[in-house]
Image (cartoon, rainbow, N blue to C red; front, side, top):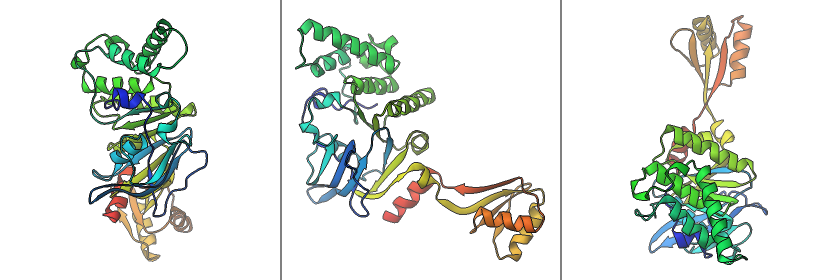
Length: 338
């Protein structure tokens, strides 16, 4: 998971929240875990984020998608008060991040480049963060040390890194560093995880593990916001997507609704595919014979194809509307906004 923001930035108060856009702005729920309203950020003459509005509810995994330079990282950094918005406001659990009591205990984040000392062990890195996170709690220093040590052991187990905990981070693979970053984000037992390219460097087994972990995390009533370019993996992980381009909201939609956008084609498998092709032609419907007993029908719903086959006395073995993949939809929507 890329480096946990930074030891102090993640653990200490001082952050905002940001996400979403204003043109056809996504609704902002009153009880949202994350709520961004008309959020904008300008760097000199560059408008990186433009009137972005949307909200995230509990128990969801949301994919935050966009081309390079779309404003995703800037938005995530505004969400965590690492960048100050030019306009608009962003709330986490109904408050600005910096106004949360012990924000590191409620929000875990992993952004961008690694921030690990190569000479320290993974466990030592986490232990120092856990101690900082426990500052201000009641109890003696020894009690806080014990609590920090127990929490470190717990998160190392969660990310399946216990066996490498005492190795120096400089010898970790990229995938191991990703897991260590996630462990750091989990130290406070957060209710919200914000992850930027979390699957980067993970092998297929690790990617599958991450997917399962995030789904279980959300099933506990917690919330995940994940930015990634690996759209095929995002499609297997998230409930909904926020797509932005040039800093503006393109769409905010449940994944199932988005990918159910029919391409206008129906794939049919029938013993007499050639005859069905002729019958469809008589009705002015375009179809293409494929290999064997399959054909592709364009421009009509599957129900219409079924009716024509029925009246012609033709047996159908399969009748499937073709849906768009997340990648198809993403490319189509962002191309329109280009």
